[in-house]
Image 1 (cartoon, rainbow, N blue to C red):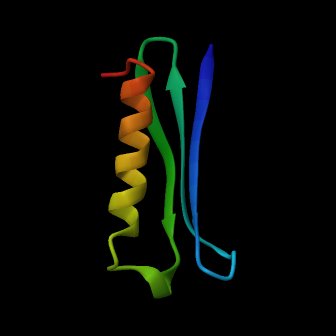
Image 2: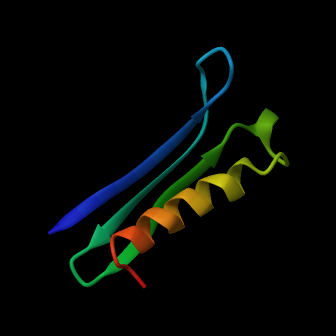
Length: 64
């Protein structure tokens, strides 16, 4: 069994400017498959924000 973990960030106009896609596996392991931030939005901490969201969700799902 596995669970997909996905988050996106949108700008004020509703356009997707970043996202993270990952999977939680039955062995209590989470893996990031893709992390993306629009080139014009890099350096603003959005990647860190996405990583933190992913990590928080993985912890909620008892991953280590």
